[in-house]
Image 1: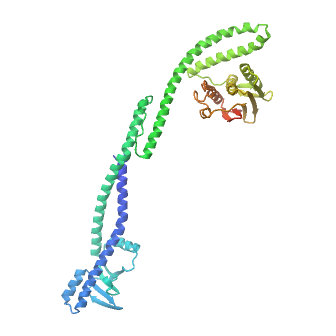
Image 2: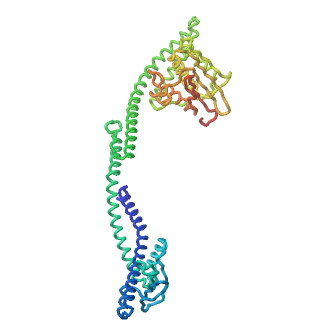
Length: 461
């Protein structure tokens, strides 16, 4: 009970109400003390008026008047004349004098607190203004013990009343908050637990029903999260099934390509100049296809090999990428160019780097072909003391907003209607395997530019 939110809320509410009652208690006890002494002044004034009516009172009657007023002496000042109206023997000397005519609230509170913590009986003088302006002032002497006992009795009654009010208030507040907040929160927790048992079941997604604005916002956010998670899990299952199918296809395709690779030697012996020029590229393409199938099979077994780093002549690699894309273009409207210093080498896996640059260049070519206006595709490379930088830029129409939002996410970041969005995802993963970074530098109506940054040292970019 005490460890629950409702139990702690009940305790805190009771404590805060008690604190508020204590803050009210101190001024209340000060006010009670002031009223107590004012009553004694009023009684003393009434006794003095009786004496003024008949200045030959019997001593026994005078003592009874003082006892009734609960004072020892009464002094009344009228017309600037100070006159001892009633008097009796005092048990001890006067210890303090209190003037109630101009006393401030802080003074009254201070005197009341001090009286509560001083148990000894004392005789004090109290000065006040007469009722109905029946003189300039009135003074009395009285004992403090009856005053202190009356203050304690009043304080106990106030504390008991405060405790009852605190308990009632805390209970009502507890029940209200339990109904308005705790039950909806428990309902949300129950939804989360049921959803966790079967997150693929869309029927278990929460439907916002809370009347409190903040709780409803939390339920709406939870519904969005659960919806996205359910879709992601479904997509994950589809990808797992697709991966199994791709592994099977890659296995058979590898065998087919291996057989085709055996016939390339006979093609290379041809005397046809065109065949001689295209045969090496055909051999290279088949070799890469076989390697891709092997990598796909290894990835399906969660055994994706890391890059084998060597010093790769970048000019030759860029020229090979451009030549293959130029053959696939079959159009004079798209121009390819490479801007790289002769002899520049980068430390990378040549197959991985080729796949990265080929994907980026192919995307640029397809963007220009889709636009139908032609353009320029430029591959440029540079280096500094810490890294190599390779840029692939085009003059196409730029990436759509959706493609920029899901740039490196498979099956979501495709730029073409029939595209899968795998190209950039694969390229980014391969670059990260080198400790580098694939970045989109710019994309607008004047063109798109991607950057491949590879570190020279051991640290990642």
